[in-house]
Image (tube, rainbow, N blue to C red):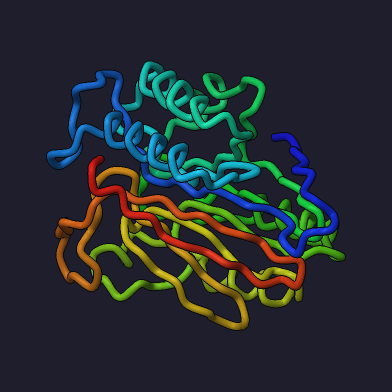
Amino acid sequence: MSDHEVRANPAATTSARLLHLTDLHLFASAEDELRGVKTLASLQAVCREYLDSGYAADAALVTGDLIQDDSREAYIRCREALQALNLPVQLCPGNHDVRDLMRDVLDVPGFDYCATLDADRWSVISIDSCVAGRAGGRVGDEEFERLRRMLTAAADKHVLVCLHHPPVALGSRWLDSVGLEDGDRLIELAAGSGNVRAMLFGHAHQLFDETIKGMRLMCTPSTCRQFQPGSDEFAVDDLPAAYRTLELQDDGSIETNIHWVSHA
């Protein structure tokens, strides 16, 4: 784990501009598909659309499920695709990730694993919510203690917490059964800190944006295939790939947009 600092314009009202990608699900082969979508081609299309948009992010946040097939080669493809963004990248693992492989292949300049990114009046903290061999997540005592220390260190800043699993139920029976089992504890800690303004996550392959206990909770759709919101049983959606842009404001508010990539 390491820290990365973004230096924004001190005269601006925006502390940092960020790009959020999640649930890439890459394979060793560029031709492999997840539910009918070639995931590498889809990610590359998302990256191209971001680059063509003219939006100038200071950093990229990637919240897990980088790969699908447990292979080193998939992480190499991920690294190469994300390097095309020409941005520092802060990552945390998802339930499909292999932590040792992920850390090893992405232990290169420009990539930070479960790190803290400091940007003027904001601190962006990534945490690990994964349990090996399980789709559902848990932060656990050790990671909670690490988060407490980082929140204390960032007591004079607004905080954005990034993780893979949604800390609250999303209203989909099958998906909520593989959510974050200690989500209530995370919400309590974050709300009690007094400086967590928002949480950002993936896993759900769908859009979510609600305010709970004064904190904005945001899920970004996948860079490949989406899930049907509100479904009792597993079901995919026809919505295209997506990414999110965020502007962290000096007053603690967040301006954010979802960008659907129809040609992915």
